[in-house]
Image (tube, rainbow, N blue to C red; front, side, top):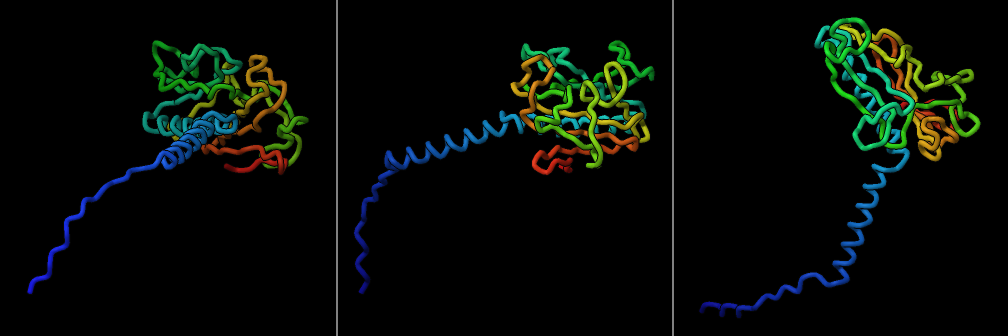
Length: 223
């Protein structure tokens, strides 16, 4: 005797309740807010600018080796130009191939690889603000620290570091990136420190390092 087949049952989907939908929307809004803040916070801007500079210095080094020509990273300081096209002047840098070998950018001869603006509000460290949380020691965490007037210790006008075909650089030095408080209040002349600086350091060997000033430890630490 065969078993009696079960009766067909109509399945009804009740969907989501209004409360469940509201909970999901609140969670999405919180996550979106966190993502936006992570890209717009002062710390993220200074950190992003420093990490991009480190990456671009290594890019310049690799291009110098691949092209067998000097490649310069030239620092544009004191908000001298609108580098990103947003209507505001920026600190930043440009990378170019020194085709004619005269150590000076010639738009008709040399090859411009890229021009980069620091994130809005970020700038090169323009004065010693050690009394307000700025660095007080050199990169080896010994002795007092003295900043160059424009935050860039490379020489030249504008200052630059040149990567050579053998992977070395023409000079050792550093660029310091921070954010003043309030940001850009005096067009490059900082009155207070909002975010401790990062230092992007280039050795004569061409090696690029990234350090951050840790105010709570009063020392430079590797990132």
